[in-house]
Length: 587
Image (cartoon, rainbow, N blue to C red; front, side, top):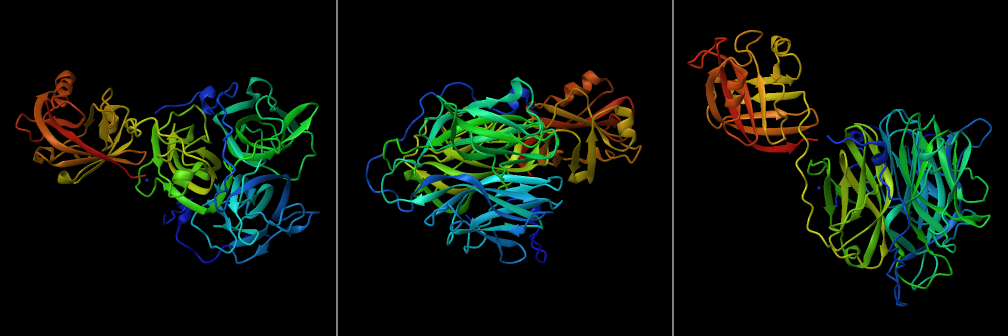
């Protein structure tokens, strides 16, 4: 049974993870999904005292993966189950009370899946009865058959509410819960590695086929007494529509899924999976409904009963809270940029890690990745989320270390970043060891450009290609071999004075200080101010020399002219050069 749509609301669909009230490199195959292979060095088992636990603290308890809710109506199966409809957009899913789930659970680790819909859509899971907090859990594109994401959700009265922006079916699977404690415990505390460790990468061999079960051997990486592994599961180059399920090694395949895929897709998802053991090997099994290469990057593990008792690594759930949204100041992360945000008390001083939903939207470029890490500490070559094209909106559950300066997000490719925090792990933040991030200038703005000069009423497209064909079409020509805006050099544009609309007819009327604007095709605006003007011969070396006289970052207009600057003669050129003033991100 599908969630149906209420009367129209504000168009947050184009704003896939709506704000809460609370700021041209390409990848090769090896760098595409960043990871670190090798042994764990310096993994820290956080040692705490036997003092009382943080108010609201809880420990993790793994459960066998189980489907709690499925709104679909399918032949030969029940017509939906496990939910109560609250209105046309919200359902309530009971967590406690289901067989085998402790009644005192304060938070649940769920896989939330949206199925179908054919439109831009999102789902949001939040504590039952608290009202939508303005955050998202799963984001869907019109072409997606199904999209899943891990979610750590605080419970309200033992249940969670799931909101859908647009009609779609919803599936909720459970993999674990957090139970309250007022004192130190042995089992169920998070131990995070300094850097993710790649435990599996099938790309070195044959691609697992449809119905394959791939074993992930975690011996020597995760202690045999650990109860669950925390990891990022990635499927690469899916052979078709399907899904991947992670479950305890040596156990029966459950009727659940962790990751959903379409043909040719590459997607990642966070997993917290109960561990199993078979034949002396501790680990997890990965089932793929359709063929895909599989990667498994281990972030850490949950302690077992044989570990020392401590209050460090306990989890304090909170109502999902938006703590970073780069759309609020319209400043995306560009290639090689880092954006950091501070955390409110008591997280800022009494936590060592946070759980969050990381969303990237409005991506630009072909492929890239995003990495979370403790702010102003060294960043390692790992990833929390991967994108594979322009215009994507993708979300992934992530657990990140924090520092006394907060959390930072690094971007290999361009996009807006949204961080919705769902809870924190007790301990002490790391100390910042580096200065604030210094971001490089964005890469040169790609053509076509929109070129505007208000004094002239000029509003011109600037394109590459054949000069005569371009200007005879009434557009401006980007002079081959001159730079792109944003690259720090000189960019030159050429247009007609009298023919084909004569866009540069009144170029001689420009005054010192007049402004010009260049709008790039990836959503930037560059502002320039007129600084120089000259008459040259018709020869290219003379023209280009004139465009460079101001030095620094400039743009120049070039057109045919008489020696007195008036239209027009083929023997001379009028060159008007503008100095760079600044740039804005309009994305």
